Amino acid sequence: MTAWLEQVNWGNDGLLPVITQEFSTKQVLTLAWMNRESLQLTAENGHAVYWSRSRQKLWHKGEQSGHQQIIKSIRMDCDQDAILLEVEQIGGIACHTGRHHCFFLELHDGEWQATEPVLKDPNEIYR
Amino acid sequence: MTAWLEQVNWGNDGLLPVITQEFSTKQVLTLAWMNRESLQLTAENGHAVYWSRSRQKLWHKGEQSGHQQIIKSIRMDCDQDAILLEVEQIGGIACHTGRHHCFFLELHDGEWQATEPVLKDPNEIYR
Image 1: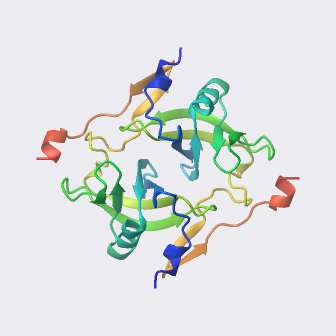
Image 2 (image 1 turned 180 degrees about the vertical axis):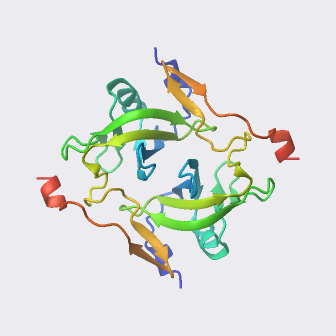
Image 3 (image 1 turned 90 degrees about the vertical axis):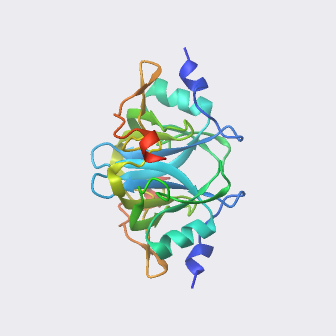
């Protein structure tokens, strides 16, 4: 049943980097991490479940904010040590700062400059 | 001069995951790794330089194959521990298997299935 999970080259810490891309816009939303259980749950349930390295627990994306990520496809790379998800981003907000996506710092003239608007106050997202 | 490099949250191993996305198609090409020196070289030289974890050395992408990645933008995420590059992929081939990109294994019915054509024989790319 889970032979496909055995084909993944999990890191020494049991984790794998996961790129999540918005299906409709192809915007890269987040870089997060999964362990074996979270990848299995993601495939079975059809929404993204990560492993939170800071909290050291499963992280059902959107459990607090409602901003779930509905799975369109699950892909793996040639070395079998990275995952690419295509998702529908519920609410249009993937980042905990209230932005559409997390990669809003762009290097310009030797400085990281914030480039994306905050769409919703984080205090309103996480009550 | 390099204050921006100090703002990056490098991992315990001194590395960071780097997503590389094709500027024209928005296809995610690769997930690779950088250390501080490779990120600095990438910003200074204008083409992607990674850190090869398998070879434990700097990896000037395209040095053998000619398939360089010309930098269009360098972005960092909210936690400052992942990088997103937008690039022009010279030769249209990012993967060492001769495919356009590395994420060619797609999960279907509990199996990883190869979905992308090999555009060029790797034996012709790496002589």
